[in-house]
Length: 286
Ligand SMILES: NC(=O)c1ccc[n+]([C@@H]2O[C@H](COP(=O)([O-])OP(=O)(O)OC[C@H]3O[C@@H](n4cnc5c(N)ncnc54)[C@H](OP(=O)(O)O)[C@@H]3O)[C@@H](O)[C@H]2O)c1
View 1 (cartoon, protein in one colour):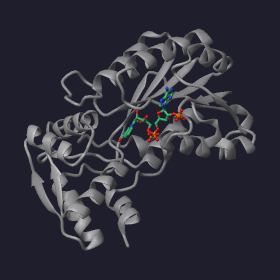
View 2: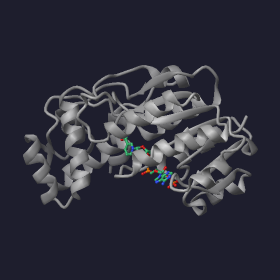
View 3: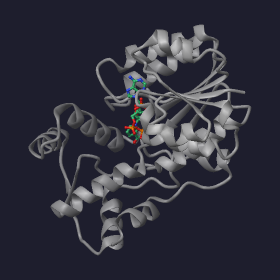
């Protein structure tokens, strides 16, 4: 069986490819990326690495001939993402792909205020309507996002948030990759949406406490309303489109959309996901 991955040079795609190579022949794996040079090491191991982009549907269609299972990694957020991803779904269908596994987000329902919901919800819908088999990996926020927030908090001496008392079931990128590799390498995942989460939902107050425990540096928790948090991000030099996304994720967290904890990572891989505290410890301990 040929398995292909789009976006294969990204943080997630590369890791999934490396995990698959532990259980598949290199000749059965096709890696599609805008930057093939970044995957030279895997090409040297015998993997077919090709330059491809959602922006080049003709090339993508040619590349996907003979592919049975495709991991379609959501592209970076941007104004054209949904259009490009819908087009990529149509291209996969006409190329004869049988099963698309798509990296979505936690609870992409219309009442979730996160700015990235419309892209993920509509891509899921396009896949449901495509006639191909589909699987959704609804990845919660990466634990690495919490690491970046913790690093910024240590620098500033304060953890600024609009998430209130909401919890986030942070999951490491590595655990997302393990779950994706398990779905790609085994049968029986059609028409299933998996909630890819860490083992617990962590509030921002708990994150601040973990940072203090792990590093010995105390960080003050500063809770702000949405507008003030957005202004705070702009003042800190965050680009407006990123501030929009961050602020909307805080709102979604406060309203409970990121707090669901599932056992899907352990069920799919046979090993529980890493706790946020352990990820922080590895990343921040000096
Ligand atoms: N759960 C979270 O906390 C979280 C956080 C950030 C992002 N995400 C989402 O999850 C995805 C994977 O995460 P990651 O950590 O691997 O992100 P990343 O390292 O930032 O990689 C960005 C990804 O977007 C792909 N991409 C960008 N433009 C593309 C295009 N025109 N056609 C096809 N692919 C394109 C890249 O592929 P190539 O460079 O190989 O072409 C790469 O896989 C992200 O793209 C984003 O949609 C989730």
